[in-house]
Amino acid sequence: MTRVIELFGLIGMMPGGDKGDAPSGPGGMFGGMWVPLIAIAVVFYFILYLPEKKRKAQREAQLKNMQRGDEVLTSGGIYGKVTALTDKTATIEIAPNVRIKVSRSNISPVSAEGPSKDKSDDEPKDKDYRKKDK
Image (cartoon, rainbow, N blue to C red; front, side):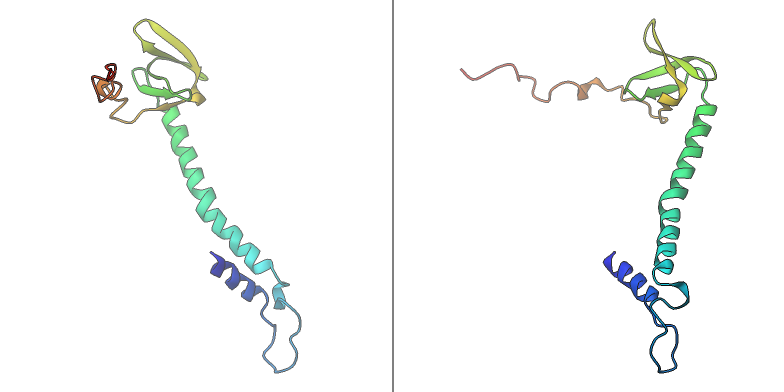
């Protein structure tokens, strides 16, 4: 990364002419540090802005296409199944006969595999964890 910055610094500090006389001033026709700043802005655009724009569009499409019966995860970490939808809210069943109403922007669809149904992860690996040596 430091080499890239050094390269941009050299490009910005190149003398303007090759006539053998003294350089016309730092930066040539771009006035110093404009070339590196523009190059950094372009790099940030392609590295940060475009991928974030794609993720945002994908999330909006998922929220728009959400239907009853879809498995979702709330921003608070609660898994549930969508039972009703409005423009701004969704009603989610988190247990039999237990429903909560949340903002649509605070939920995200769960992938096809859904939440882990295997309860063995919740149990300790050592079954005799309560027994102590006396």
